[in-house]
Length: 191
Image (cartoon, rainbow, N blue to C red; front, side, top):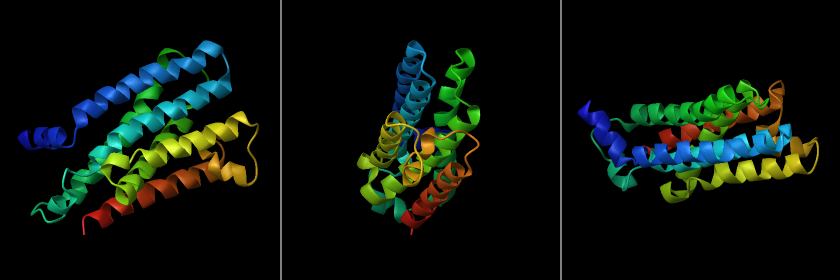
């Protein structure tokens, strides 16, 4: 138990969780206030991206070289950490959706959380912990622009995967690809 508490404190998890809850509470209801289903999806995507962006900074310690040379295996802990980020990033908007339905599918929330968590992990691997938030927030922003510009099709559909309906297979494929690449980025960072 003590090891888990120390891990959480060293990775900034309590502060990240508080910010994740705050983002979900602040952003998810905005779409409900307007009554627009498209805006509800957009705000849930943005809330998920902010939650993932905040939490992904904890995927690496203060000194990545020290983590890499540690005598303990970090990859199992980081895998659990990444899965927890995705679960919490999906769970918070889902809880709000259950309390106040707006028409956003649970499958869409899950798909977005998994894909954006992978992007957060890739961001940490490429840009470092302090800038790991950039890729999930950028992906959400591009998707929101595509959503607001009309029904995305063709190449725009690839960039708008977070705002696609639950039955679009391409969106699931992109999300899964980002999740797998994110885990591989974590595994590579431990070598």
